[in-house]
Length: 433
Image (cartoon, rainbow, N blue to C red; front, side, top):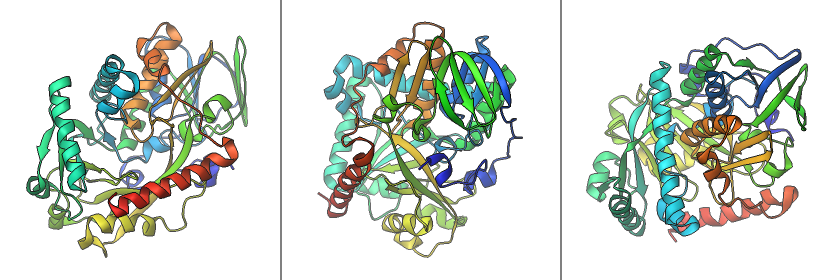
């Protein structure tokens, strides 16, 4: 089953709250006939658009092909959280790759946040960017761990996190589900579709040739690469694969290590004065559940709430019902609130929950598997691949050196095995183990 077309209307954005409030970009043309380029990029999300922008600004002749619309996939549907560091916390990374490599990954995470902010300012992208993400603990043990982590980050990385006990956290987020937490004022949240379309405009202005509704069905590698779409083809010196969860069968090396999963988001009706019973500040929240709940208020005081994952290809028939359950667990007083928008999206994870950047051939690069931390990672990965096309890129090499084992079970069994594992961890969340 092709995830590009199994859950969405061809060439159309999902009916998300983001799409409802974001001015639509005029369509880019379908690729027709044969064209030549220095670099061909497959995928029009954060990764591909960032790579196109940085390459075009450096003077390269770039063609980007996207199966649907730019920002169509996870880049235009996600929770909008621009988190610090990597998907794994620094203490986990120190054990996994050692303190020196962990510190470099922290620095790269800081550079990723700064890059998103810089691009938004430089290209005039009004994406509703606001500072602050809270990490919520749902048990006393989790809160102790979060507070210990804050002490570690301050002592080892000179990075402050606000420590909140139960009373202080309840003043910020009055949910009975949480016992305390920490707040990262250096992180941020934003409208991801506005950011994606802004990057597309900037890449277009810089000279990148963008083609939408141009699904790739075959790639031939060699000294030159040929990318074949339904109605055209691109011959290029270099190829960048920026497909993330929608890679499909375009490259088996990556597909074995990067697995698509689905996640779901709803938007409530505007809450008005009742919004203070959700959040008293304009920050975002992510909790400590293995299947993470994440949420924030929109500028018009809706609750944007994400939760629930599936590991099959199809979205559930009733996304509202799927997400309403965790929403009601966190905010029982909203059990009857009207959900005006509900949408799903396909992201991609790796076994180690770290991005998979790889040089698949001397002239073929790939980046994917951001594991729910893709806003900063993906924009940065695009820039790093643009560097790696032109010459050495220390940042690209740092990510490429990270361990990224294949999922067990192969194509047939990896999804059922992951589903079993995730069911177990979700049960542990419910039992408080």
